Image 1: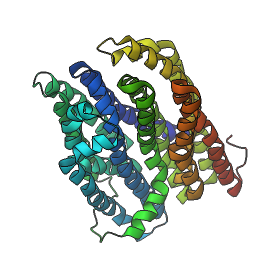
Image 2: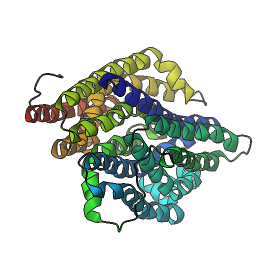
Image 3: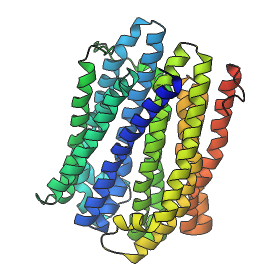
Amino acid sequence: MDIKKQFIRYVSQNMLGMLGMSLYILADTYFISKAVGADGITALNLVLPVYNLIFAIGAMIGVGSAIRFVIERNKKNPEAESYFFHALLWAGIISLIFIAAGIFYPDQVIRLMGGDEQIIATGRSYTRIFMTFAPLFMWNHICNAFVRNDGSPMIAMMATLFSSLFNIVFDYILMFPFGMDMPGAALATALSPVVGILICQLHFRSKKCTVSFLPVIPSLKRLIFSCQVGVSAFVGEISSGVITTAFNLIILRLAGNTGVAAYGVVANISLVAVALFNGISQGSQPLLSSFYGQADKKALEKVIGLSLRTAAVTAVCIYAVIYLWSEPIAGIFNQEHNEELAAMARFGLKLYFIGFFFAGINIVGTGILSAVESVKWAFTASISRGFVMILLSAFTMSAAWGMTGIWLAFPAAEFITMGMTFAGVWGFFSKVNLVGKSL
């Protein structure tokens, strides 16, 4: 198949799948706002970073192991067969920490994230349920990554979309006809990855499948080897959680629970944008890793160029939608018609989303660097955008300009990080004699 057609096939299907994944978080937010009100949104927003962390670990292990699987398979390395089982095993081991915390310490988790006694009472059951199901979230991410990298992006997309559809439908059923409120939302979310894992079995049980379920002893060295190239996927998921945690703590001081609820609206809408860029990144990754393993420089050049251009066009489209329809978008999650919340959210959306002109390049760029084993630059850019620059920007800019500084901290951090991303991609181009051709 022509490279451009392959790119469109992989990226479009993965963007659609990632979009579906983000929509069920929006469904949670919408139904919770309708059933519980602003306290429910605040509780959800405070524990969302823990959910991001679970997903991020699953993404790092899954995407990293799947990249190593493709590269080692193209190099005819027999160890490629053991990466799938090894990823599932380590995800299960790590998830025990979340299970224990969810069962025994849900109140402490919410309090640690900044919740007061009222918010703890609202979010306790939600936190306990979704943390107990941590291994399913991780295993779903791993199965999806291996299915996609083994040449079945359509099944990977179907798994993501149908698990998201399940969550949205059962959100409504459990919260309203069954009257379960927050526990209902948590249970619908917790069971949705089962649907994704079952659909992935369509590929694993097909003759087309080259992924082996080969039992091996857990190796910390191999886990680290896989996670080195999965770090951009980790940061792609965790950065939303880190940003949300830091912003929640600052906003609680500046504007109280109403400010956190307003930021919850902005943060949840931003998950859709992040999902689209993650779709471009993860959709192009199997092609990049395959062509890199085959040492096909010309094909690499074309896929890298297509990825960066797609990110730029997507950023323009996203900001146009936010700028033109910020009021109705903010109103979706303001079921109590709180005018103060609505005004904060509208203003925040227009400033915060400027950052996606730069974040799109960073998300896709770090994905490119990971796929071609440029570990140092992928790690540097990922850590900058996910931790260092965003935290520095949030604390300094909020001290200088209050809530306006909070909204502008994300664009500032992504803009600075974009220089590191371009330096890494340029360095890779130089190494393979492709300077200037795709940029």
